[in-house]
Amino acid sequence: MSYKITPAIERLLPRINKRADGCWGWVGATTGNGYGVIGVGGRSGGNALVHRVTYEHFVGPIPEKLHIDHLCRNKLCVNPDHLEAVTQSENNFRVRGHRTPKAACNYGHPLAGDGVKWNEKQRKHICVACTATNRPAKRLGLTRREYMNQKES
Image 1: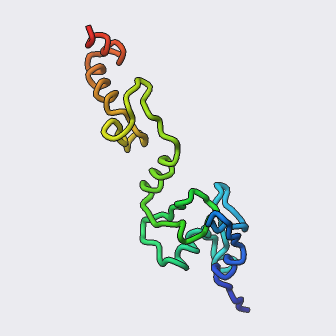
Image 2 (image 1 turned 30 degrees about the vertical axis):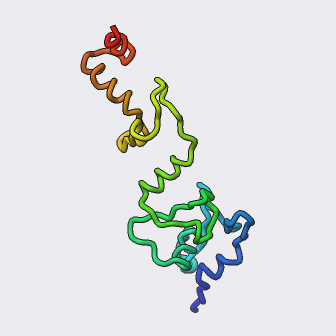
Image 3 (image 1 turned 90 degrees about the horizontal axis):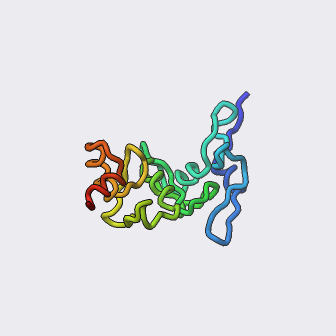
């Protein structure tokens, strides 16, 4: 006995709520971390994330090793105009970038322009001035404050 499998996009479209802010809100099932999900390929076909299904339907194939970023920051939005294929590191950076950045580090150095850089190993922005102060202080076995006091004397 064979079953006719309805394409995921046909089952997906009726479960979209087009909102005034431009987002197409998914009103179906979700994953544990808040993304929309829909079954694909029948009983043994598994699931797919709805924002990926709509991107592939309206925009085209997702290039290998790229992720789909929600430009509107709404995990349940499936509007193809709000979705963009990006690398995982770009997606992660954008998520962090939407937090309100600090204007200065704990020591008062400005965290803008050349005063800040991204540390991939620590996965955070770091103060360039503090980094420059920490290196010689560590070499001398001093704390940052001890080094700065010694330098001022």
